[in-house]
Image 1 (tube, rainbow, N blue to C red):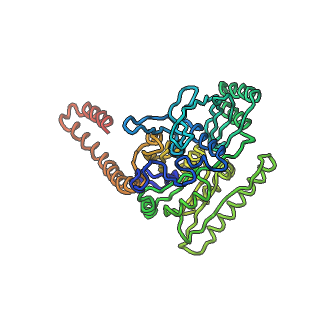
Image 2 (image 1 turned 90 degrees about the vertical axis):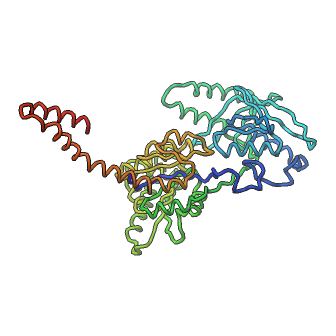
Length: 453
């Protein structure tokens, strides 16, 4: 197994449990602020805004609660670790998501320092799923007072009954359509309602690299493998992760290909493409004119720019530049772009590609590569089910191509050498008995040999 290109999804979630942070007693929650803990937020000047923020964390999601009978605590099956962390945090602040039905979610709300809780029901009128294009997820709810709200991961908007009814009719029509443009219609209808929002608050989730990731990447690079990181993180985060996992090093020259913001008109789109092509051309010349034989380049490109770079009239210029760079980081990319980049490398270079990821958004990339590796962990099992090989942690990837791949290659080579010899031996055995039946026996020998080989 000769692997020369590896596509890696940026996986910085810590799959090793809580051993690294034993002081934190609650899984997924390590926040401390005396102004907010133990109901103290009720005495803050903007308590109503804080209340709404915590309610959004407890309501705006697609998770399923599971009650632990021994501890009386709820755990959550969520689409992502971030979503589960938000629910755990909301529970610690007194807003415990406890039940979901087909039409409602129920939350235990603790609105006094005495610890007494009240169960509230919020009817889910519509669910606007997260998409990589919109980069947000929303729900339309009706509270117990009959008011309708649009909640959008930290922001909200109060809706009039007439306004909601008119929008819901269009949304239902788009959701029940069966044409090829169904997804585009849903995007358009969702954008119609997700506007004029009121900012309520912001959340932050700490990501940690798994143990051994920098050392593993360094060993793979020493073995002659080129690594590309395809991640949905923003550029600043992707660069920081690149340094922390040794993909980017001090002294490495960075080539950042970005695009200016545009409204998407035909004239502006043409100008944007020309600008990107000019950046690619200059970067290729800079790499070729570099006189230092030890100089290393890193290419960094965002998802919006990648949309243009993957078009037919530009993708080979992009590939030529990327192949000459020691490291490539594609940030803010969609699952479809991950698969397209993998296909471009596989078909454009003719090299064997390996893709590794741990989430559902990596399935397309894993299936497109010659070799797919899924990491089993907190992101779910979708990547594992779609892969050729499954590992528990990223650092185990080091032995897969370097050790087991070498053994596999050696065994296949030995088998290929023995195949012609085996055919000759079988043919000689079956044709050396009787001269009178020589022709008949040779025919049988040839037929059996073809079947066996």
